[in-house]
Amino acid sequence: MYAGKTLFAQLMDFLPWSSFARIAARYGGDDRVRTLCCGEQYRAMAFAQLTYRESLRDIETCLSVQASKLYHMGFREPVRRSTLADANETRDWRIYAELAQRLIAHARKLYVNEDLGLDLSNTVYALDSTTIDLCLSVFPWARFRTTKGAVKMHTLLDLRGNIPSFIHVSDGKLHDVHALDLLLPEAGAIYVMDRGYVDFTRLYTLHQAGAFFVTRAKVNMDARRVYSAPVDRESGIICDQSISLNGFYAGQNYPEKLRRIRFKDTETGKTLVFLSNNFTLPALTIAALYKQRWQVELFFKWIKQHLRIKQFFGTSENAVKTQIWIAVSVYVLVAIVKKRLGLEASLYTLLQIFSVTLFEKILIEQALSLGKTGTMMRPPITS
Image 1 (tube, rainbow, N blue to C red):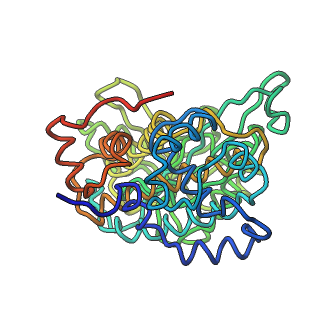
Image 2: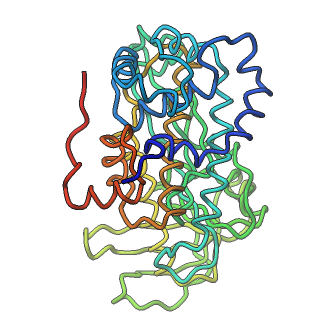
């Protein structure tokens, strides 16, 4: 029988703690701190994410009943909700943002050879945002509308492994298209976006950087056909054209030709019009790439359902951003563990198993095998 580390401690071992210490020192995270250092704050918040805790009191209660195991989980003393609340309010959220970025860089290396189901060597990204609603009276800094508060999570998802390569948390009023200004375009990469990101000045910036984009055309786009390539209409491709933009300003903003593909989806019966600056890929591949954009929607749905970003443990902007970045880092950490240990289970299954086995002194692989037999699959206990 395995009698070593708890499963939670095994998960935490996958974190780059030496790098985390340097990050915390850079932002003075542990300056004049006597209890609950940055590392312990992260562990407490990660515990809350992994076990679906709903409040600071919930975190304190669940950890206090396992007092004998806390030291081996990385806690020097019991976690008090008031201390954790103070840490979330005052510790710079950028500490956890940088940690998440380190994990993301590592995860992307692990998933670089994942199969997209398309014959492509390019890196493919999906760009989108999701809105997290907040109560304006509780979060007055997150003004969205007159009577509503919100923050936006702008995400660039690497579709090889569905790893977020870029995340920006803003107030709810920031328009999606402004996220393009924050990106450093990667030459040769393909950026898949919905038509909310159609801004020809910004798209031309991507083009000049050697990157490709695939998006949908707006209904009122004014353009003229320059050339039509032959197509097989039975494949769903109605037309494959080179176009130039009409209008003085549009022509100045994007002075080169664009590719316009009209595609009829046989599953839904809808006709979609795609825009791209890539003239070499087959038209069906362009359509398939846009279909892959749905992965970022699934990522948002998954992270909202399975990580704690709807119920926040603090009301300040710093506390909210801290919780969002720790939630993202936990998602990426589980993805790293899955790849490093060669686990076949989905991230959803892994999180379900971890939620009820964190205090157990069993190997991660053993917990997974028990989960398959149903021995340990029960809903997480809530106080």
